[in-house]
Length: 95
Image 1: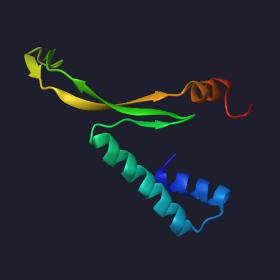
Image 2 (image 1 turned 180 degrees about the vertical axis):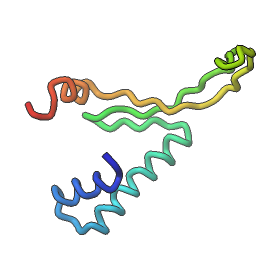
Image 3 (image 1 turned 30 degrees about the vertical axis):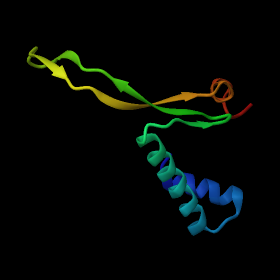
Image 4 (image 1 turned 60 degrees about the vertical axis):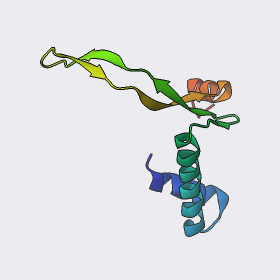
């Protein structure tokens, strides 16, 4: 699903104008990006939690050449789905 498809889906369900729906979706994504980039977690009840995790430096290997390299420390975003969301996915949306 693309962002445009998501906007269309919400537009059909909620009944806001297409422009308002697009602004709402854009604002939601921007807010999530801003908060997570500042190192804060976002917990969406019934959906899941976005968090930032610090990964330390480590030794790695170039798979083509076999040369060992040092991989720099970095921050990564993780998403942990809620129990309810996991259960919904397991049983499928038909049920």
